[in-house]
Length: 215
Ligand SMILES: N[C@@H](CCC(=O)N[C@@H](CS)C(=O)NCC(=O)O)C(=O)O
Image 1 (cartoon, rainbow, N blue to C red):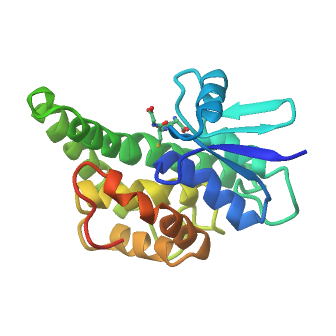
Image 2: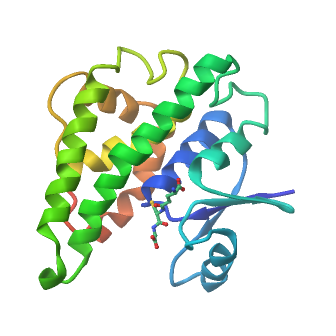
């Protein structure tokens, strides 16, 4: 059975299962969501309540939401899992993945979403509120990130969430120098993360704020 992963290579939440699949050597077929693939666009509407991606199918099994998709990939193959086996470590890993999703990736998406609107429809207050949320998240995370991976153990689901969240958040609202910025650099040096960054590179002209000339 072929695992199919639906998404777009530039999409932050799609990077998460891509990184997990590359980490664990899971083979899959990438189903591109764009105007050239109307069949995939029709399928994602069935798979996801809002048509947002990623989604994954494996025969009759269908999942959307990046974190459950990563958890499903843990069942395939024998490489180290993205969710630690230890229950306490697993809870911390899921918690941190949720923090990166809700408090870094989502405010980052809000800033980008405003930039995608026509100028007269842009909501400056929403942008400043999103940036204030990012500042709080940066400070909280900087106090918790050490010299290794997010959960303090091996690379895992929290790092899969952190990589795209911090990558794009730094573009919209730079992360101050310190442990979080250093962690972002550490993530970018990880081969699975470097691979998704490279695969997304051709799509940088889609970034509405003008992609900076750096990773
Ligand atoms: N909570 C979802 C978030 C998914 C999400 O925001 N996906 C974005 C791409 S990063 C999307 O589908 N954007 C296209 C759209 O909203 O139409 C998850 O964890 O998968």
